[in-house]
Amino acid sequence: MLVMKFGGASVASPECFHKIAKIISQRLRIEKCPIVVVVSAMSGVTDQLLDQALQVHPNPPKRELDMLISVGERVSIALLAMALSLEGIEGLSFTGSQSGILTDERHSDARIVDVKPHRISLALKEGKVAIVAGFQGVSRKGEITTLGRGGSDTTAVALAAALMADGVDFYKDVDGIYETDPKKSDSAKKLAVLTYDQAKGIASGGAKVLHLRSIELAEKNGIQLRVRSFNSPEVVGTVVGTIGRLNSVRYENEQ
Image (cartoon, rainbow, N blue to C red; front, side, top):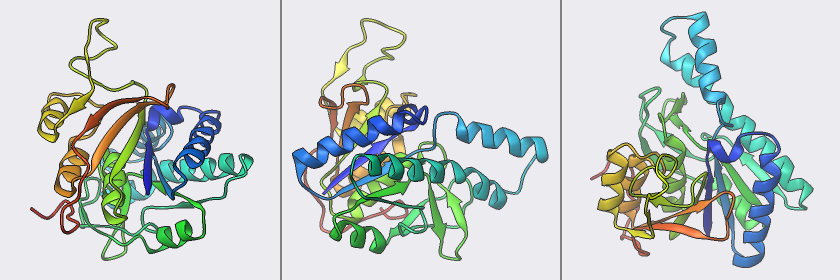
């Protein structure tokens, strides 16, 4: 089982989906295993939606805001399914609720309480690529919720835990995690391997390569996180954690 995550920078334009489809096609040929792909909204889309909301209401109701900004990821998953079709690969797109991402009731900053990926498992058994909208879920009351900034990373890790995958490959606009921002310093040192604690420390210090919540959830479930460059996808830049699983799946509300 392979879980792949593509963030906003890797879906900056419609053309990017063709590149993602080719990366997925290559991984299918190499790995020969079921693949789940988690996708963020295209770069800038969520901010545009938030701006539009604020033009209508200075303090929009959080329920309606979640309904609005969850649209961005739904656009991405549908476009990726179309791009995969051109590669001769059948992909099925799923919203957070269709994927079984269950959350608490907090709009705009929900926490995952359970994952029931029945439809994803069925798609994988049928030999299809499951494409999941990150950043969103559904409460037990049936309300659409969003997970806050960086929530798509957390979606990918939660699905990996539920589907018993050993790791998640994150495709970013950088080729790994660095001690300092490589965009600001040519001498920044890339870190090949990090413990969960080291990665959490870097994330807490403001680095945006991996979201802190996703690292914490990966640690709870013994899931390895691998950072790859979207532009050089064959190279693993940084590995966080170790391969191995705990006895049971644990989510964000559990110690």
